[in-house]
Image 1 (cartoon, rainbow, N blue to C red):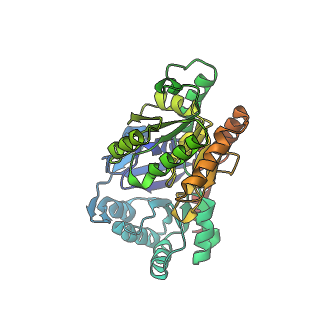
Image 2 (image 1 turned 90 degrees about the vertical axis):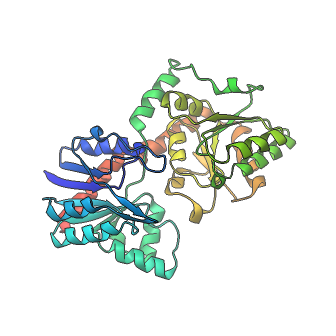
Image 3 (image 1 turned 90 degrees about the horizontal axis):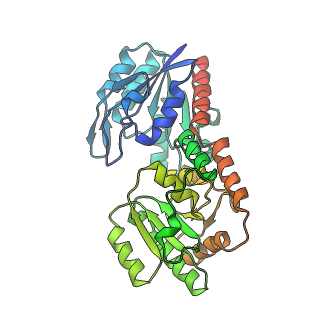
Length: 376
């Protein structure tokens, strides 16, 4: 059995499912390194989630990170491979990866990878850093294409996608679809209960561009198209957005923060479409798991990898960035035209089943490790 370490500075709670999927392997014994501490409001996964967890505290110096336990682990442990979060600002990773290579331990980097064409200096630095790895694991096919175009060997880039807790969401989905879970009805939050619901579960920040959503809804109402808006989350834009909705007399309900999947599953399932006017990441995964299509902007250079789960007219739509008229049109196409909701729900969930779930991730990562080790 291979022994492999995966080094994160902290394991966010939404990584729990993929950690568990990896930990179930009967071919690889994984050791997970992480701080065990939350960071910037993101909860750390419970270390007891996996069989082998090693605490590895870190220090931040502005945008740079230092994690001495990662270096010690690479220098002393008997390992077949080690996977690092591939962030060049993690200074300790440069040293730990170099040491691992000297010890003939296969090195893999797990990262977003290339999200847009980069300036020459930044591109060269990334190539030098990624050159420390035998293989690079990226979130989506576009990152692989960009990496190859930047000069990194295409055959050393593996697409591992991203995921949330699909098994848990599947349990909630089955309960809702069978009518056994019906205590949360988002239409009851609005005066006009028959209107389609536009939802977004996200932190309310300026980058989310909910002002564009409000502009689009105003345009739709001027056309006679009715809809309700449900925002689930908190953040610094909460009050400005409330003021904007009141001023424009828009049917917006601010649900506030919610981390209860029992509630979130029903809010998403019973909404018509998710709209994330700014970039979209795991919000897309969350929505598609419950069969709700996603709309976001069309500028790939300012998007997250998960946007590639959106297939035009099938699992959602892309609108022209910063154009409220285009956004209004995209929303209208989903809430006005005659759509087979069951079919759309199936398309959305099939996209998750095929690529964006923890079991698929774990299988691809395991194959990547095997390639790296056999090559070494």
